[in-house]
Length: 197
Ligand code: TMP
Image: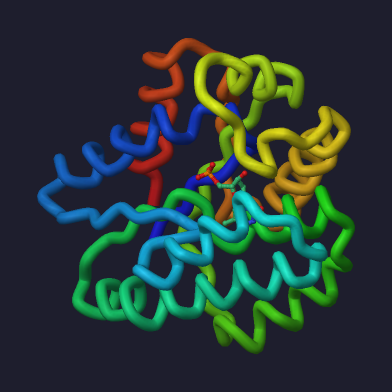
C-alpha cells in the first residue's frame, strides 16, 4: 500500500494518477482511493468532516471511524488478494492536521490508531512538500474552499512541520518529494523512488 500526503496545494492530486500508472506499467493492478472517504459511509463522513464545525478530538475519532471502515471493507481484502492500493491521504494526515494543525496530542492519536488499525501502516508514503504559502497560493485559484483549506497560514505551517517530522522519524517508509519542482522532474523522481525496493 502506498499513501500520498502533503499540505493542501502541495500537488499530490496532480501526481496520484502517475503513481497508479507507474505501478500498472509493471503489470500489477493498482486500486486508487482517498481519505476521508473510500466507502459510502466514509464519503458521508467526509462531507461532515470537510464542512461542519466540530472539536478536534471529534474530528480525529471520525477520521479513524471512516478509516476503519475503509480498511476492513476495502483496503485489507484487496491487499490480501495481492492488489496494490494507492491512497490519497491516510493516518499521517491525522497526525499532521488534527495533531499538528489542531493540537490533538500525538500520544492520544497513537492510542486511537492502535485501537482502530491494530498496527496497520502503509508500506510506502510519499509526502509532497511545498512551503505553506505556496500551497495556499495554489489553492486560492478557482473553486470554493473547504473547512481545512480556509485555515490560516500558521495552521499549514504546523501541518507541514508535522509531516516533515514524521518523515524524519520513519525514513524507511516516508519519502519527502519536493513539490515546488516542475511536474516532469517530480514524475521522474517518483519513478526512481518506486523502482527502489
Ligand atoms: P483532500 O483535499 O486532500 O481530499 O483532503 C481532504 C481534507 O481532509 C484535507 O484538507 C486534509 C483533511 N484531512 C484531515 O484533516 N485529517 C485526515 O486524517 C485526513 C485523511 C484528511
